[in-house]
Image (tube, rainbow, N blue to C red; front, side, top):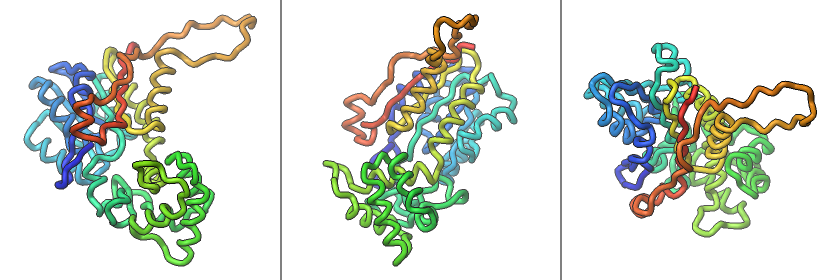
Length: 315
């Protein structure tokens, strides 16, 4: 994630993530969230002539950057798909069970946040859109215009973790009856007025906007599907590296990895005459959750919420 007026992108946990992939010169790797290619370029530096890297992104601007990189480096290919579709892409290319490492760097990239035209930001006024791929699905404006009040409240609460979701949803619905929402600043203003308890150093519309973005892009659903697909794609000894930016994402990643490394708690009574198969872990966790260093936090405040988790496939 970034800070730069030219919508540039500073990749968070760049070296740590690529190091965690433990790149083999002749291996095949997947970058599930190409973005502006920070991680991909570093992976390519570690790959030999026989190595391969496949990048995924939904965002048309990311795809343009990826195509330029693919034109100059034959080991790299980019596809315009969500990483939730990674399974079918890997199968089509005959790579299932042959991938050395998969990297997911979740959340919105800074060029998306900083470009008002994409409608992700409540700080810069723009059309209320929020889609990673503006050619698919429904925009935030369409959702806000048509969804019932209860559904808007659920999105704010569940995905934005907004305490005042009901009150804010009511304000949105009351206002849309008079005039529909088409701009981010307009929506942000209504949310701001409806939010009775402003958190220090946080715009009162932040959580609701996060909730909308996650909903419009089906981010949590895609993540669950993508993690399963990534694990299937990996060879034994392959690494899965995931960087998340908020607690909802991190919880999904943590539970997914924990379940496969340590098994699910079974709640069966202990005296049943059943032969239990001992749990065989599918993955092992590599190290503890990692956070951005002090130096990185200074250079890029947006990295403060980043958490990286790493697992290795055992069977």
